[in-house]
Image (cartoon, rainbow, N blue to C red; front, side):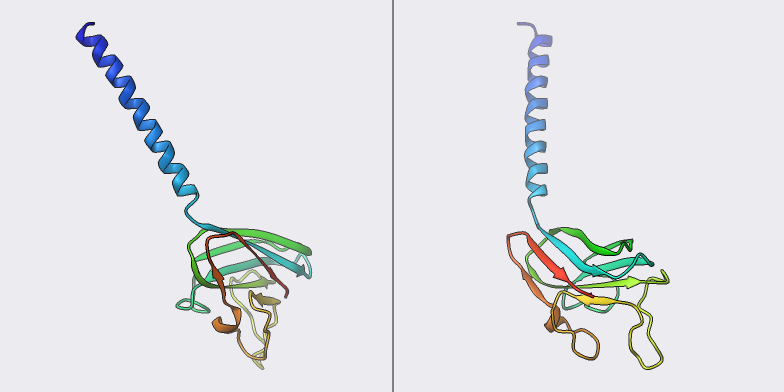
Amino acid sequence: MTVTTKFTIMKKYILTLFFIITGLSLSAQQDSGVTITVVIENVLNDRGNILAGLYTEDNFMRGAGVAEYATKAKAGELSFEFTDITPGDYAITVMQDFNENQRMDFEASGMPVEPYGTSGSDMDMGPPSFYNSKFTVGDEDLEIRIRF
């Protein structure tokens, strides 16, 4: 065997090994987190956008979430996913932004004028709390159902 032939064979083995390691790495990354499927059961109409956020206790109701979702509103049931979520405690807030200004609008009395919901079923008077909205992500996919 010549030096050139040995070099070509060695190069093929190295490339094959590289692709195997890269493939294993990519498949490990794809399985690194949980998928949370969110189902909004009662979008009331097609007006505006649906905005949702996944929050930890540290950022709940304080700006951007760990993950966010937005789409045009469509009356009926709507579902979407937050993917690759690590274990921990989270809460989800969802709102229908009628006027597409990217925020909740309120009446002079402080009551919201746009539909909203959270991952907790407790919709007491006043703003939602992380404690009443939280759920725990473990190592299995979840489905969270929310009603406005």
